[in-house]
Image (cartoon, rainbow, N blue to C red):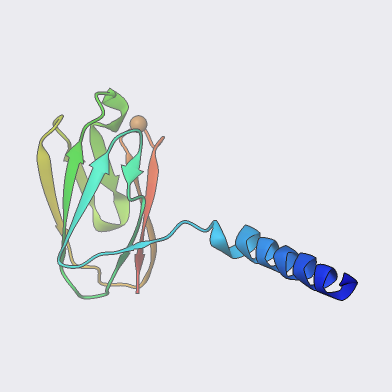
Length: 117
Ligand SMILES: [Cu+2]
């Protein structure tokens, strides 16, 4: 009986540790041809995976009236766009390099990341 208890507790502990280190990681969204991004208190999703050389159109809609978020900047892609409130803005990108590329609002306060594979 004791053995079963120890095993159960041990398994639970292993599960918890696994969850703690791996389970909480933010899941990246794998973009297809079109990816919708909601801007509301940040970028949703904030982590995007793209394929190198493949064109993806980001459809960005800002629902947050905070003027801080009215601009989106993708420095590595040399893109700077004004996001009108509740209006979809399209940005098409064809990543030429693999790696991680950040994007942020006009004041560099809200961040997101594009991972190109
Ligand atoms: Cu800002």
